[in-house]
Length: 131
Image (cartoon, rainbow, N blue to C red; front, side, top):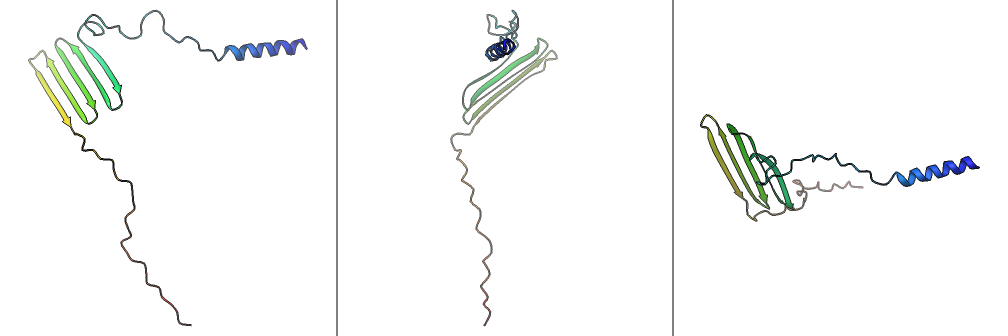
């Protein structure tokens, strides 16, 4: 009887302790860069971010590279308005900028529900046999 009591207590202890959450956090160092005073990760002006504040609204952008060759891109969408900016620069006096702004307005209409087309033929005329 004592063995059954010990096994029962052991099973109850494991089943009570197992569902509790265990810490999954990394060690003392932060896994992502902490922004500096200028709001960027390393303070060197290069960054990457995304922001989704609400449904049908988002923005993201980045600036990557080094002082001799870099690229910057920014995209945002709010409902039916889409804006994009792309800039680049290199050490060989190469520089370019593209700006896009699409505004589709509120002309969007939900599609009509599906209804099959009427048949393109007429049913055959009934034929009766004389008795």
